[in-house]
Image (cartoon, rainbow, N blue to C red):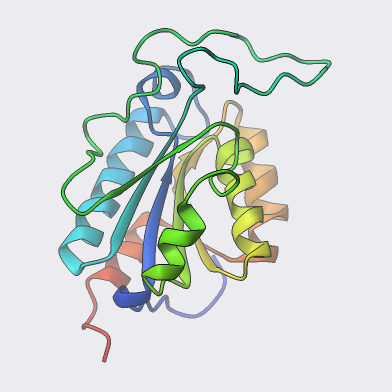
Length: 198
């Protein structure tokens, strides 16, 4: 991807992992299969924890009674209306582990109606490493909100995936470069392995 070598200030950076939970990881994904996305996100999370970078694990699901679920009139409804038990549990490869912050959201984006912005700002975070599924739903919605809140963003392209390769490609090609930097897992890991800031 274009751009200069990635540099990260660990004190002011957070990894935000979107919706790597049992119900979504169990569905098909492209261009990267979910096992690959989970493995890369787990590697990023471990590298971040080792550097003292905040890891935020986001998962989505309605309240037990389902009454806070969005129900707009749409032409293409979601394939399920009542998620099965355990659907919203974060995959064990990710954690959570000590020091991680867990965010439960009720819609695509991770900012609205959650404490994500509050927790990032109180920790002095201004750069977000973003990955997860789906690229064109949860990841993109969170990215747009982060952009509007003034965060610097690095999108870890090969640690994201969508239901169809063309959906992923469209967002990576037309949206992400306008609101942040698109990089690969290896580039981010190399930046995390660099000398400590300061």
